[in-house]
Length: 59
Length: 154
Image (cartoon, rainbow over all chains, first blue to last red; front, side, top):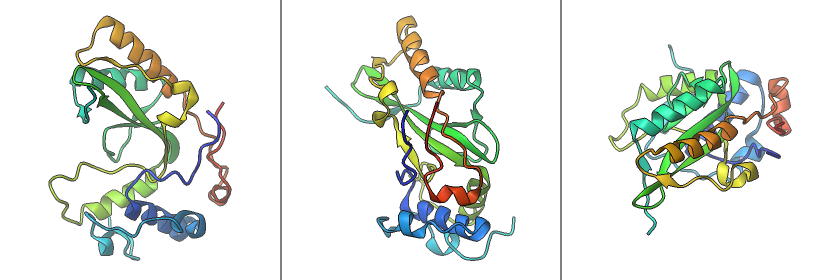
């Protein structure tokens, strides 16, 4: 199937942003430069403060 | 005439579940839009599947080949549960995926009658079997994800 481009966005940009943040926070992997540079800055329909908040959920 | 939309015909969905099971895939634990399956484990190949209405009388399978990261999806779902989403919100997708239109071995995809026929079912099952062969190489560690780890398939 050839190369799988890791930067082929599929999810809403806020979720991609969330994934990049999760990788950074949980695994100390910084993908912000390759992943976030071209990403749209769009929130709707999500609550950005909850979805990207620094504090992990309680559950 | 072409048309848009996706079919939720339970017979096609059952067929997808059958093909997934045969390939060793299982439904993802934290739901994604469409029919979504992974090979299981914390980081695993995943396949998000739809049946697209391509004409008024025909459907065609459509899939996104990706990697399911369970710990991230779990946290994302927990955060989602603390928000209010509009009723038209139909679910999430994995952060990254490869559309089957870009995968040579999955083209062309079968266009079959809306209502499953013996011939249509065979064509879709054959195609699904090839789609479920999706096996990106797994990252050897999170650090390796920096340089396209999700790279080669067999």
